[in-house]
Length: 507
Image (cartoon, rainbow, N blue to C red):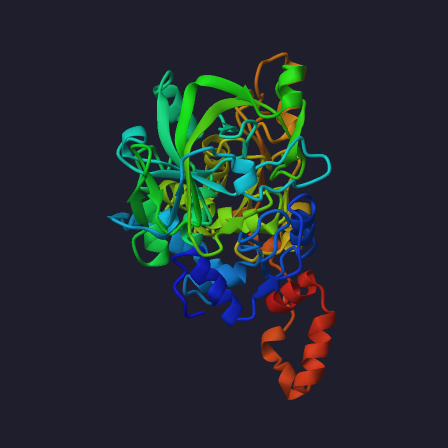
């Protein structure tokens, strides 16, 4: 891909040039049909819907991050496994954003008689949803409210009024901290839609705050990843900035003086965690909570057929968008503790969401390294809010294969000695039903974190020869010496993903 991925438009252009874009010209309904088609083409092409029912002149994009190989290519990489390390380098050497005078996102400015649901083709994700939920937003906080840095993150919103919405802000998130510090204020913020892919990746990261503290320049991370500064432009109606290359921007205020329920049903019930909202990243139907009110003061957008963005929270899209920077955080956390022990980390796409687990690959270099893998597990479970599972394996395990990781767990984990538990009774994620259930069982308010689970699936260093993995001589075989290209392709097409992994390993 040769086009720079510094806007959603240039990204789609690059995808089309590489055969990775599907254009849908037939009319499609934002109620159920867009989400249904995106899920039906899971891990497939990026999709551009060009004819949205009820929204003439507006387009919509989805499945942008559905394939890791495609995303890696956007940032000049031939191997998606390298993307986390480029993200880590971006965190260490950020490229600060720059302010421009004019921006594509402000070609059209609307300030009067705003009716957001009639302007934006907000989708209904499933038939169980409590409402039409806006999920493709990158909420931006600037220096004054983020310790001198920039903070950008995805937040789900429901427009219960024509020009105001609920905003779900997770406990313990950077924006949550800002709202608590400035409680009683109206915090100016922009809701940016259809941003450059690097910004989306940063916004989805769920950063570990011990690695990325308040005051970090998160837009600087995005700039370094994409190879040039993210452009900002002064907002039209508030003292804040918009991301210049966005397709749409909602300007407004997070009103910390008002808490509102996400849905009418939730307000009627009057109890959080009961009324349905939308499918969330752990794979369960999300539930309604009271959040701060977001008051819109302006809607700005590109003039030429602006593009909406509809990521599905439980999807390869969100897993692949959030994984690179989150993986980078886990790697850096371990590297600060025991330099050189961890060789790689991975979050498996499609497995309970990118916020739920991490897999570490280590190489014990000497007997003195024994035990440090458990310190790393404990640190991960403590530092990453609500982490459900952390696994550490040896360097003979393919951490990109769930089957191979499971093989290591089955053959190397002792139930008595190798299952660790994180600190019980902390704060978890409201999207995870077990946290809500734990709070109920324990008679505690909010979310009762059960502590997560750490699995030490490494072989003891002193007994490493007993765990010597059998290897077949695949490296001695060049299949093309025996098979024609057509026969080789036919045979490999019959192999399962784990079969291909074992073929690489010789295991």
